[in-house]
Image 1: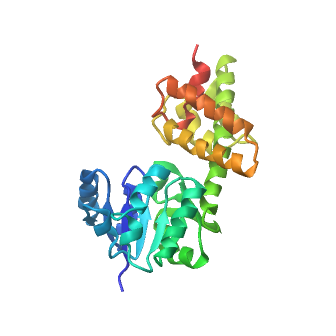
Image 2: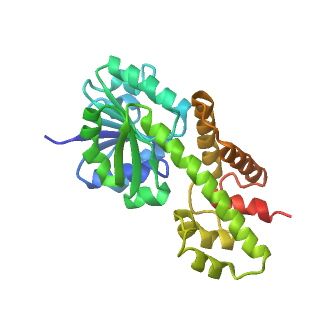
Image 3: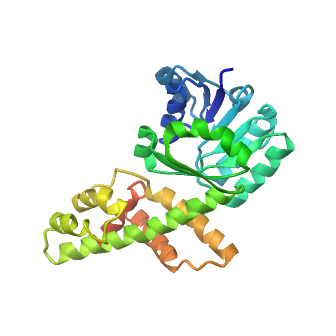
Length: 290
């Protein structure tokens, strides 16, 4: 029996992720707020573009979502035209949005009332990872639902783990963003110091990247940071959204995040400089500003 899937949200991440499912031979129906994007996807991947959420999910065994924030999730999941009311009983709902753990837990409760399974599955790896099918996916949910959805998610992931019950995926993604914030600020300060010291900055990176200072950020972003190019990844606006989620969760669980809170303020400075759509490595520009 053929597998059917719906994918809702065709942004820079969702568009290629849905494409990987279609290329794997899965029958995919898509919906996007901007209908033209869904039509273009259907043309690119020989899938089905739907005018409504209800028509996209009605016959789907799996419903994938990848939208902007909590409010977007609540809009597409709840209400008479949403996923919960229109997905068929037994369907598995997989949400790839980076959102709060609270909204994941809330949606899972609503899903269970309609005999639907729910997995929160935020991703890391950015647009490049989505396009190459090399995302890291952190999941929360029941083991059975995860095992059902796992073969499909493997089409666009390089690492895929069940971290615990619903909400654990989102909390793991928070850990990821907290770690990145400190790393990018540290790399920005290091490169800025090298510039001020009149060193050959690329040569410095070539040396220190062979030792304990090495990181994914250094390997993949240092060259563009040196060049002042910031069109290569996750936007500052989205990072601030994610850090706000982290800081709110920390207030609930008692975690202390002084560095993450400070870097969030620094990203606010970057926004004020006109860098809202720059990638997260643009923290260095704040240091260069005279």
